[in-house]
Image 1 (cartoon, one colour):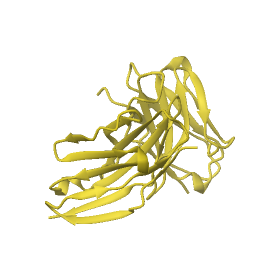
Image 2 (cartoon, rainbow over the protein chains, first blue to last red):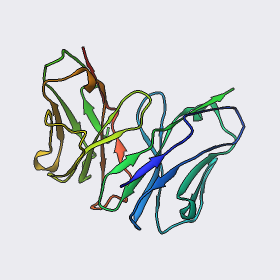
Image 3 (tube, rainbow over the protein chains, first blue to last red):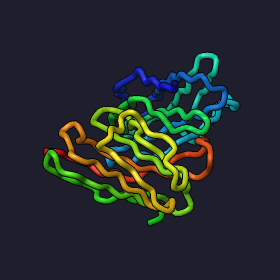
Image 4 (cartoon, chains in turn brown, green):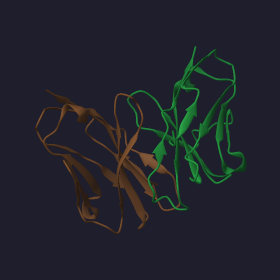
Length: 113
Length: 115
């Protein structure tokens, strides 16, 4: 069964601080996909990144970076030099091949000016 | 607007009434998902369609819930005999492909309040 755990319920940082959002997953499949979504106060989920289980390369996109480690079943998300506009709820999700996407409970990030 | 569209955005209904929500996916997307999200929680999977075929249903989807996707285009989610526990945001998403390896694009959701 697929399961995603985001242990951090809420995180608060001051602008320009770096922040890491943790995601731990469980799956029995060898082929699976991991995602991060952002849900700003407006409510619409916005796709950020997708990773498949065969690609453990870390990825950087501007101030965002992702660290995928199969050995620890983790897919952590780091925001460098956080900004107030980064304030949102962030969800990690897991999808086993041919199946639906399952979400974690989310981490609410508040970036204070 | 070429994104996922959901209608209505808000619905208030009395307990025991039936409600129906509509989702129009991105036009070329063959996968369509329904999720439910309550306050402070992540989206919970309800069901998904590959074209017009409903391939999986969550056990959250009681017999009061039914979803359809005629002709593999738009989808409807109906809740019969609504209960207060059905109050939530109902999210629709769509994606392209036959496996689950592509990102899903979400609509803005329908917020249901059962009074």
